[in-house]
Length: 392
Length: 235
Image 1: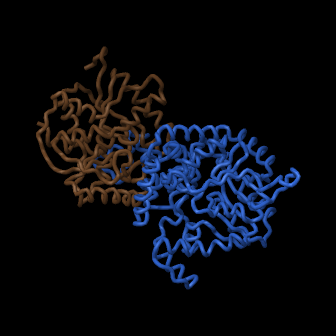
Image 2 (image 1 turned 90 degrees about the vertical axis):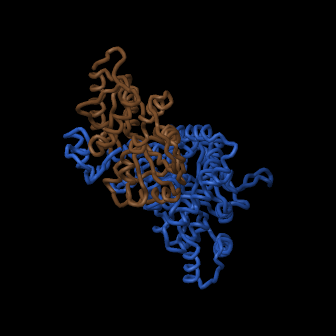
């Protein structure tokens, strides 16, 4: 376990404990589980309703079955010359969009900006720069910009702010993800930095890229989900900002005539990505779609402690396991269920792991399963300690 | 041998204990006898089904469960006692797959603690600082955290908890086929747990799971399976 993660875990655990003070955690988790189960169970019906309500509020809605379709739709909305200000989004990362476009893009999330600066991969869904040391950041700043920055988090953050802020005001397009989309037609985006508020309001166009599993039935439920994401994602009682977007900016102040495009975005586009999610439901892996993406599980996961983003596929942790195509990665998980213990919706990784392993066989299990079939035990009939202890 | 009315109690050691650590099986047999438990054992015992089920072989699991349940019925077994945390969870899960055919399953430390409280099992007093490693299958899977700790305290030990314990306990790195499929990764996880154990400066680490015992065995921290610690202090 790298020292950066040891520190992050300590701070996170103590903050989360404080944030949960006065909350009956088990009741809270029951409620969240019910919200997510209802959303995934009634996915098609809720999306139909959401699209109808989003469109009637002035959103332009697109459905992308694959990342390739998403890129095509994006290119119809955004010109190659448009400058893009982007906030952090795991669905945008999953879609690979940025590799397929030639636009100038500024990462406006501090963590993502630092990850890009240091030529690293994001190592946590909520805290992407979790594994990068102060020394490495300073070295990269000097290498790439010749700026001299003091070795404190405050000085680094101030420097990053100065790099990003002017470019948000120059941008033609604001590109964000979403934490929840409700069937009532609103999009919820949670943040601490204030960049999403700017990115979604300053440029003329706001493009939201999200996925099917972000659906929630009501705005009240979405708010509860934001509270959970705050507590379990960063250990704060509530994040600094919850952006609730229900259409483009508008006014009816002149003669009651509704005119769109006031101080906020004039156009709001939302692309909803499937990319195998309906397939997960068909295959009996809907448990993975209950995930809020808070990353709480990872702090306690023995596999993550060793592998960081190498544990999972697009998504780190149990959700990533459901999308895994490599048997080896399925055997990073010891099914210890520390994840379930720390998950706001108690996602059952065991259910996911059993199902996935039945679909993707490990060649290294041959001996164990042969022994089971021949002798009724995993070690066979030879006495003594076998080389490989396959148990539990 | 058959007590058709009350039914038999079975001691089910689990494959790892039976095949790899027969010493642990012997310890528990002695401990059960001293506790005044009238139990039987099976000549041929099958795997509980946990390794195949967690590796995705559901059909193999169901066959094993069916075989075990039939044996339990043939021998009028009404209660099963096991020392293996994985078997404990798995045997309890049978009812979910075979409704109304499940048996009562008790973990060995529950039996031991009852025997100590009733005065049937008498302990010599020892002392020293020990740390206890919660096996995932006993802790998070079955919420059994306190019995082993209470017994260790009754022996006279002071328990020094590791950084992660009880529901937040850190895995030994061996579970669900990781040790056999990705040994290097599993070993790194074990090292992480041992780092926590060393920090307690306890004179030994005790755990109730035979796989955790095997996985955590190392030259710098003394590791004992529960029965090994208990057998030394029984009068």
